[in-house]
Length: 179
Image 1 (spheres, helix red, strand yellow):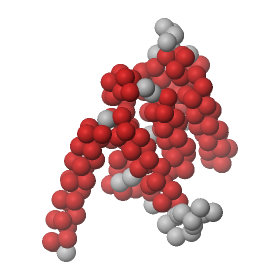
Image 2 (tube, rainbow, N blue to C red; image 1 turned 180 degrees about the vertical axis):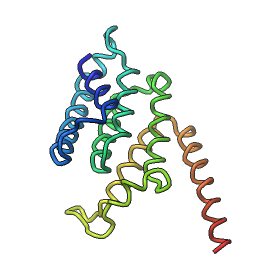
Image 3 (cartoon, rainbow, N blue to C red; image 1 turned 90 degrees about the vertical axis):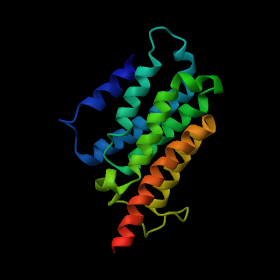
Image 4 (cartoon, helix red, strand yellow; image 1 turned 30 degrees about the horizontal axis):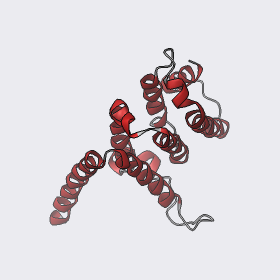
């Protein structure tokens, strides 16, 4: 109830947000909370008749793809990875629509044609303590999330990724022959 309401509210309210630093910190803390919520309570709540798991995932999806920065998005991916980790193989069919939407959403998120506003702000030069740039960290998390879904449904995810990249490769090939 309460977590779904919070996600629904965040997914549907775009006005009256606090100043960005405070709001971004709030979203990061919320992502930490959601990760713990999923790891500790999702499977138990899933059995409760008043908990609608599909509705929860729908709001989590909306929230994930509306966050204002790539760094917060990466934290949201950690929530999804936690969700995938608690699934049993027999749960895949029940949640396949949400997982498929997640893969397609992540594939869009890493493309400039769909997410230029956020991607152009990622640093691709300065390395962090792990020797990675912001861009590399972002891509690594996106690929990890897609790979986790692929562990559950390899052929479906492979097909989705292949179709997307074949389409993009065609665009780049046509651009290269014109240039």
